[in-house]
Image 1 (cartoon, rainbow, N blue to C red):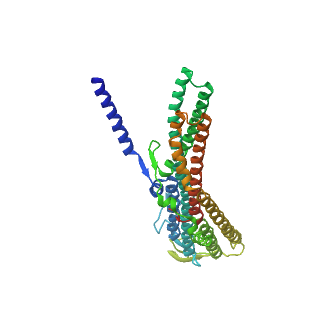
Image 2: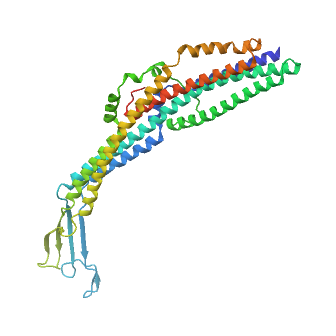
Image 3: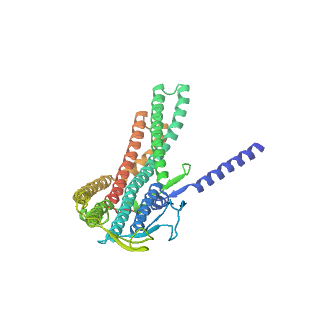
Length: 422
């Protein structure tokens, strides 16, 4: 009686532990995963620092040059044998203060250039987000459908193990042939090997997902895919509509165009840099000038005779030509990527539509009674193994097609720079 009570307590403890583990599992849909990614991803956080650094350049551009103060004092008077005298009778000193005045609106042009630099940093951030979001969505779908495939293996391995035990007993009794037991063992080994390979791939994908979402390695995760997400159709969108969306939203195209603007702004700056700046100064000299207690106003300006900033101007002009070429290249890449992704998405969706929806459900009904019929010797071992293998291959192939369809939708989001499919 006491043993039974202890067993019941043990079972309750297991159930409580399982319940706690289940409650601690993160159950996430694609939107929740993306929110975690935006909040916790370290690559995005590091890229955000680049934006703040670029904003600091605007502060630097807005600052005026500091005035310069110069002072000179008599060090040693050999007549009085004294150091650093400043009196009118025995000493001498001079002082001046100067200020550089930038002409040709250089300061404002520097500010505009720095502001364009901030836009570049922001667009680099958004392009990184676009790329990583595509990787995130792909990883999400890989994990989800791999988990579905894992269920197939688990559902097959357990009854196969039970069947092997039963056949092993029958073999010992001399009721079945050894070759039949070997065939079942081979089936079981194959199933377990495939499951192990799938588990290894799943572990790698879970690692990538946790890294992208900033989650601890031991965090248990269950991914959910709503019917609404699965039922969205690519046929609701035309190629031209997707292309317009890409042209308006693709951060890499905006980055190329902003880089052109940056070079154009830099050209304006480099041209005015050829115009010399003026340095204005005010000086005072006790006795070293005429008249004594001299006060002077000075102005200094370099003569642009040799250096008119020709090299930097030419370099920026070359940069403008290169930026124009990059814009054209990016536009061509965009058009081809949208077209290719659109065709792939249509093909993947069509492949799934061609599968009879009743075929898979009918297959499931057959498999439900397959093991029972085999035990009752209604079908032969060869028929059993053939149907078993066909069921597994059919289910795994459908999961692959589903994954291909969802991945192509993620790619549509990527090439258009939008969240058309959520």
